[in-house]
Image 1 (cartoon, rainbow, N blue to C red):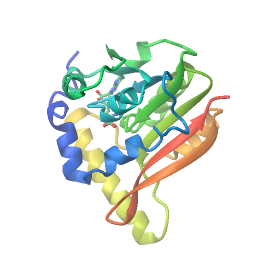
Image 2 (image 1 turned 30 degrees about the vertical axis):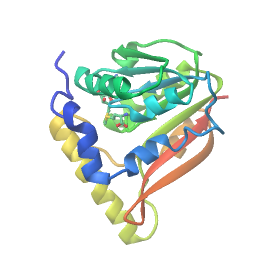
Image 3 (image 1 turned 90 degrees about the vertical axis):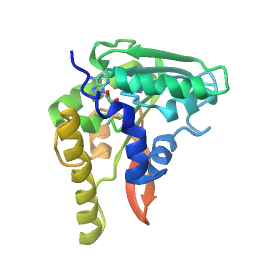
Image 4 (image 1 turned 135 degrees about the vertical axis):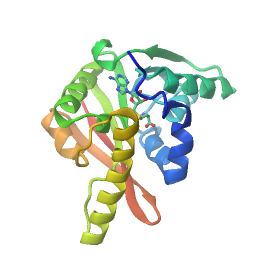
Length: 216
Ligand SMILES: C[S@@+](CC[C@H](N)C(=O)[O-])C[C@H]1O[C@@H](n2cnc3c(N)ncnc32)[C@H](O)[C@@H]1O
């Protein structure tokens, strides 16, 4: 099967930096704090991409598994791993996440800017599949563009920002174009306890959000 990220893969993080400076990485790391992540925790990163945050989790002592369907993305991820000075516990799996089944195995499951690639029906199936990989009480982390809230200007700016990104990804990777997902509602619908959300700002506006849920 053709790698949908053959074009984006080599430039993904550089483009993200141009688009958002450090805010995207900040968002992706925002739940990887000592409150939620302990040394030795088993953590799954689904659709890891270049995965600097997965490397950071491993540097904090986590036992990390990353899964991604794109060879181009994983090539960049491996370069990041090689650059780390530390002896990291990272397992790299090149596979469709829907065929990856290590049910009830992980303390934390992370889906950063991953669920938003899919249309709502498939996103719900992928999310449900990810939740199954977590142990009872596992943390489930989702990073995404901020849900459009606030006054009319804030909502319009967030919509514009989201649609300009997703249209670019639709053109280059075939991602689905849809409104920003409401992950708080989605987590509750999937039976998770919603714990927290952390916003990351860009030019003073809440632009990205990391959501934390807990499996029963
Ligand atoms: C928009 S990128 C996000 C990458 C990274 N998580 C980040 O936050 O920068 C989506 C990633 O999901 C991967 N992906 C898409 N569909 C997948 C699937 N079915 N199984 C595993 N990975 C998939 C892509 O290859 C890509 O690396």
